[in-house]
Length: 83
Image 1: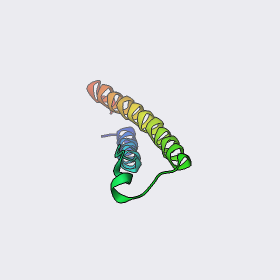
Image 2: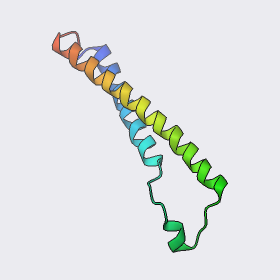
Image 3: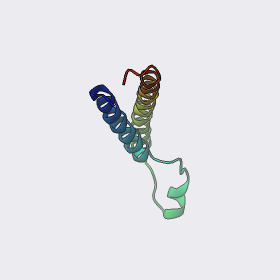
Image 4: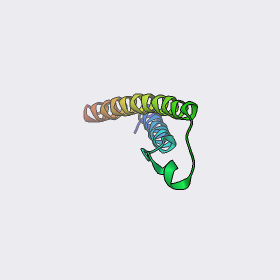
């Protein structure tokens, strides 16, 4: 494997870890649990959570697209014996 193959492989691993971290940081859809525990969400906290989730959702999509592009690039380069 050439130097470029190793570099692209390392970048692919970093992107994979970034996808995992961004997905783990997202909150689940657990609506209504505040009633059970007695915690009440204010309007501000609900909008803040949505904006953070929207931000993380956009980054998840971006990292996923970059991941797919790198995987396809590595496969094409390996198929033509460039790496």
